[in-house]
Image (cartoon, rainbow, N blue to C red; front, side):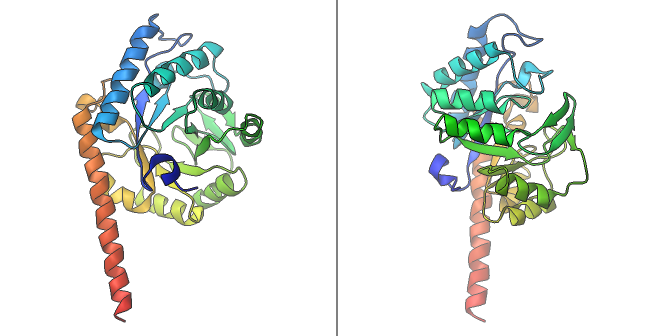
Length: 283
């Protein structure tokens, strides 16, 4: 797929709105208005900072269910995302943690969101929630039944998890795209706030064969100009928070600085490619 069809750029910066605990989660505070107001503030800060898209996650619902979430979580997220869409004119995505892909697709199709993130689309992963199996067949069939155009961005060897079996990165990328029909793949480090290595990104990009590869964790102003050379976009959260604390609110100044670094990295890559082309022309 062409990311520009969704984000109006071939290398999008996708900021994350981490929702405060939702109803039925262990840390639910009892006030959905407070959750909604915080989400609206963060979405507005991301938009003001210049991101190309936003993904909404029930991040603070941890510990997560490994599969289907409580129906009230789907209801709450649908309401909140609808409110966000009234405030910002940006493509919206959904990540329904830990791995409720069908629930995310249902929300996205209802509110006309643009994409979902699926942590385990294929294979079997050992996680802190237990053993999670991919649901590619069920998800793709459900999308067809809904006649939905929502794109599926799938993690490969997702963070906070280990694959069962001896699976290499390149094969996993190819299977996720060619056999499980993901529209893009996401590569992260071993945990939240840890980036993938340049080597891993290069392997994934080659294996993807032209399909988009997104950075899914650990990007910050110090490393993104280099990391983006080997990726087609980035999902960013932790480094945009005040005091670099995951529980803090998003700082729009940090957002704009991060976006500027991404554009700088893109410009550097364009200049390098042009130089290489000029060298070949003169041979």
